[in-house]
Length: 505
Image: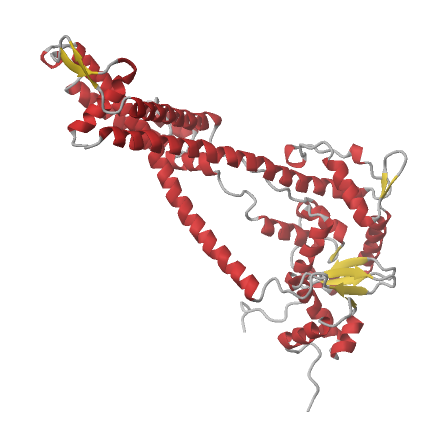
C-alpha cells in the first residue's frame, strides 16, 4: 500500500491532534515541538496552525534565532464553536431581528404621533378660533354676504388647505411652495426626500457609513500585498488598517486563514507574512489602489439639511406647548368650563378658551369624562412623546461625537504609522500633518499618546530634540525589502493556458 501524500490529509483530524498537544503544559510551541508531540509532518502543521491561531486567539512570537512560537494566553477557548459562541450568535440574530421590528414600529409611531398631534392641535385651535368669531357675530355670519370663511364654504376651504398642507409635508417636506414652484425645482433636485424618511433620519440617523468597511479593508490589503511581492509586515498592516498593534496582530491572523498566508521569519529573525496565493494575478493592480490607504467615514447626525431638522424641532415644540397647556388646564380647571354671563351661559374665555371649547366638543360627541380624556390624550401622551422626540436625537448626538472621535483616532493612526514607516530613524510627531477633520481628533495630545503607545510596542526611543527612533520598525522593514528583492513574481503568476472552455475542439 502506498503512503498517503503529505498534503492529502483530513484537516479536522490534524487539527484535533494539534489541539490535544496544545493542551499540554508547554507555554510556547514551535512547529518542531508540535511535530514531536503529534508526529505530524511539518507541512501539515504549518498549514493548519494559522487557522488554529485565529480560532483560539494565538499570540505569535519570534525567537532570537528566527523561529515562530505559538502561545495561547487566553487558553484554548474557541471563539467560533461551542455552547458559548453558539448562544452568542443566536442572541445576536434574535436581538437584531427584535431591534429591527421594534425600530420599524417605533418609527411609524413617531411619524404618526408627531404630525398627527400637530395637525390635531392646529385643528382644535382653528375650531376654537372660528367658534369665537361666530359667537362674537351672534351666529349670523352664515346669513350675510361677503366673506364666508368663518363657516360653511369657509370651513370647506380651511379643511381643503389643511389636507393639502399634510400632503405637502408628507411627500415634499415643505408647506409654502406652489405646485408650479415644486415642478420647476424638480429639475434642480431630482431626488425628493419624503417626510417619513426625513423624520427617520432626524431621529435615528442614516445607519453606519462604514458598514462595508471589512470589505474595503480587505481590498486595500490585497492590493498592497499584490504590489509588494506577496509580503507584508505588521507595521505596514497597521498603517493600512489603522488598528493598534494588538488589534492588528489579531486581525492579520484572520487574514492568514482567509488568504492562505503564513508567518515567516527572515534570516536575521524579522517576522513578516507571506501570501503566495495572492500573487497569482492575471491583471495589474493600479498604483492608486496600492498606495491609497482608505479612511473611515465620519458619522453624520442626519442626511437632512439644517433647515429641515429645525422644522421638525419646531413642530415638536408646538406639540410640547399644546400638551403642557392641556395638561395644566385639565388639572386646574377640569370640567368647570361653563360660566354664567348677563347674556346667558358661555364658555370660559381668555387663557382657558381653547381648553373649554375642547371639553365642550368632547362632551357633545359623547365622551363621558372629557377632562380625564383630555389630560391623557392631549396632555400626557404628547408630552411623553415630545420628551422622546427630543431625547433620542440628543442622546444619539452625544454618542455620535464619541464614536466619531474613535473613528478620527483610527484614521489618524494610519497617517501616523505611514509617517513612521517613511522615517523610522528620525520621526518627528510635531511635523505630522493632519489635513482633514477625518484624521484630526479633538484631543490635542492624541498624536503623542499614539506615538508613545507605538514606542512601547516597538521599543522606540525619543531624543533630547524630541525626535523618535524606531529601530525595530526600521529593522523589520529592511528585512522585508530584502525578502521582496529575492522573490520572482513570475514564479507565482498564472502560466500559459492549456485549456479553454471557449476554444474550438
